[in-house]
Length: 298
Ligand code: NAD
Image 1: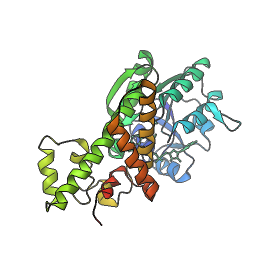
Image 2: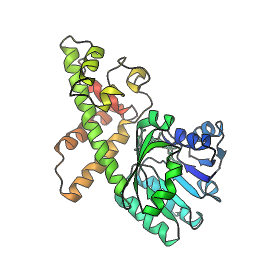
Image 3: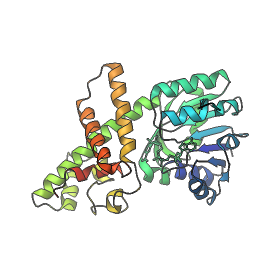
Image 4: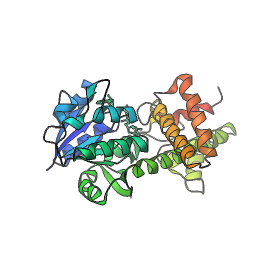
């Protein structure tokens, strides 16, 4: 059993922390939202009143926060308040599973290293369903030693644990994956609506395409058309899941990455614009499969 601090208990972090509890670890949890803390404490997590208190005696610190500014603020400090860097014990391993820019991951890693604190970036794929089922894919950036040390902890929350390279490499793998995911979601949405507009039943069309060359994850397990599948956000008014604003953030990260490496990403650029437009139309808090509504005829 390991002593683990878990910070950020939202749609993803909550179920991930619960899986660590279920695996028998001592998990001390903190979130700015008391409701989020209460839902993990109900399942056996230990409550901390502050982020600082959560890291007391922790061998591992896992964070699942919205964006780079939150990760940097929590670990290195912000607005004059000290970060966890002053409180985490030497030799502890920080596992940041948030999706953020690689440069921030590298900055946090190098500053923690000065204090003898180890760090890996370990963003995930698999959505809220994967977080609940403990079947996430982890994409890890960091040293071989830290990867091996983190693996038994990550295996309590995920099924596929990949070592992408050094610090920041996990984040690069993640933005590539999410850029592809957004393109697939937009393409699947427009194809389904084209079929519906021409008299097809979206369930029948989904069955056909998922057994044909158009098969992909968004069609097979996260269908964006309402009532084709049970237990997906599209059949629940696009509630829960992965927010449009988070996808828009990830596509911004992908575009920044492409500018730095002078890579061409025309499909990703179009998907970023569509998600930005969808967000400014008031859909930022909806699940990202709600992009389907862009194609529906009113
Ligand atoms: P979320 O908004 O549901 O949860 C974020 C949590 O962080 C909230 O509970 C918030 O209160 C908490 N928080 C923010 N600042 C904090 C601070 N300073 N201290 C403590 N807690 C703080 O977001 P989510 O959907 O769980 O996503 C988290 C990360 O995982 C994001 O980087 C996202 O891009 C990534 N991600 C999400 C999904 C998904 O399907 N939702 C999938 C893969 C990756």
